[in-house]
Image 1 (cartoon, rainbow, N blue to C red):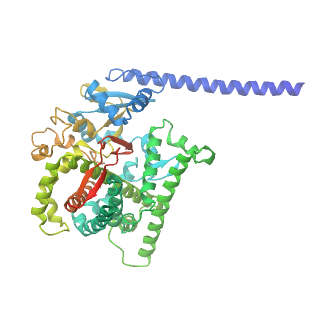
Image 2 (cartoon, rainbow, N blue to C red; image 1 turned 135 degrees about the vertical axis):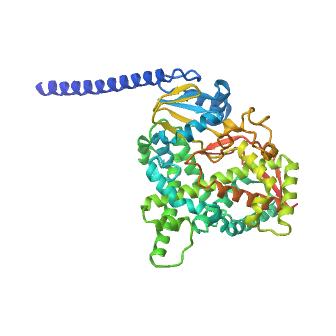
Image 3 (cartoon, helix red, strand yellow; image 1 turned 30 degrees about the vertical axis):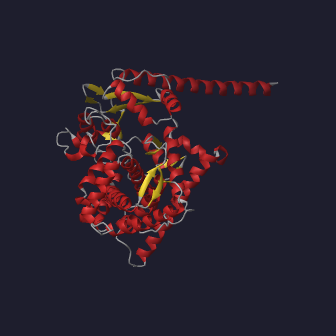
Length: 509
């Protein structure tokens, strides 16, 4: 009898302790949210649909109803609430900036008071606890570590260095043109988004790591599907309100569905691929063999990076360099095909600059002045890189409003590229907009397709060189016809890509 009484007493006190802890935590969360809601109540924005989830239910409903992405929801709210507005993503207040002077004031003039939010960027570097890009340039939230890594990598992406890689760009493009010729013979429609993905994957591999992936020629290559699945996993992480630490529970196989399992396996495949090539290059350097003067050699020879850090940077450049450029090429091709007069001008200019030559030289890039305007217009209308997302370390007045410390500030190139006050009739694809941009105030904080500030995209010049070489050479060799029903609708898989894949028939001129 005494034993049963003791057990009941123990159970009672344990239950009471658990209930007390639960009530205390709940009270803390409620008080915290009330405080956050109060200190940001002066900032315009839509009413929250949930005390705990903020605007997340609105976002989920919008996406389910329209089939559109978060960026488009943000665009809708920008035009409803103005150039500075607030959304709550669960417990986190996010202030969106859509004025170039605000962007300059926050992200450039006050960059010392901003940090990357670990809650966000840890999710970018790890897929359900599986290390993917880890703490690469994009995801590294430690400022000193990031500065060191960027300093090591910068020289590889200088214009002078990229000039030496024009041969690589042309050689990969030669192989891509052979692939296009085979598609012509097959007479089957293909997704140019997929085909461009193969070309940019091989290009970044050749230039940065001296690796031939054979992805252009090998229809069974795992690389593109692994990259796609890895990015899908990262996007799923980002849309999950749980922290990166809590998402590690999906490392347990019994909690994985088929989708999560395939995403984790894709990340492991990519990291094993990177690890093998890093180890091979380390051994070659140790044995005094001749090695290429590329990014991988720079990362290893510096001597300050761990094996994991080298692999992080390898995968950051390998995946980001492939994905963003292929998406830009795809959107650009879609616009060119919908405007035959633009394609004609591109070809006329290319014939004048290149003559009978097929390979493009470094000097040709600057002479393709009309195509440069076409490319910039494509980047205006279809930016594919992520926007700056930072946490404010101190309160700051922006646009007459006090933004409290601890709040996330964010912007998007889409806010500016679609602003009729900056670009009249922004829905129209018109390269002549870039004939003269001197009249646009704060142009560098208005047109920033490769992000903005100190942590802008290291590969922006690489991407522009690659876009020029591939697009001009492909258009000179082949004619493309879009399949009926193709649109420029967006799909978010971390980066922004064409939802319909730019499906085309490929023909000889």
